[in-house]
Image 1: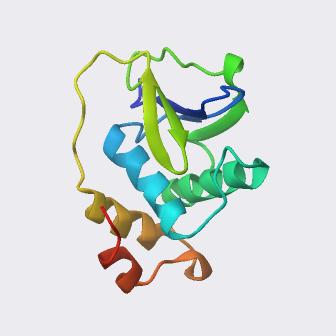
Image 2: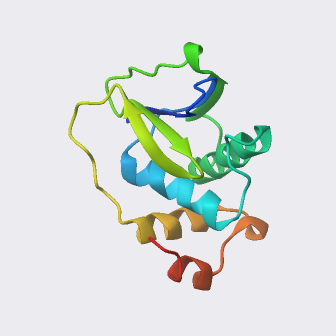
Length: 134
């Protein structure tokens, strides 16, 4: 049991598996944090995937609740939040989801929570978070 989700891009080759915090508000927070940090997007190259995994792993405090693999090896139809399809740090589609949409966190609150878990050199300034187009 978890709050699972998979994150992938339109080409559906690689995916990130989340065992926890797979709801839309968390996923949008992870993506927005990467966008505000000006990280290269996942569809551009492998660095984008590494950045996103790093942000999520730092948020959890370990790598135990996040995995990365080719999409066919991941539990895309996971019974929780399904699979988010992203482009340019935005959710552009979703598959395997017909349940109740969780809205546990506001985006600004999620950004501050993610930011609090980052090492000092990765943290965003309050100004960047407060001025973000949400």
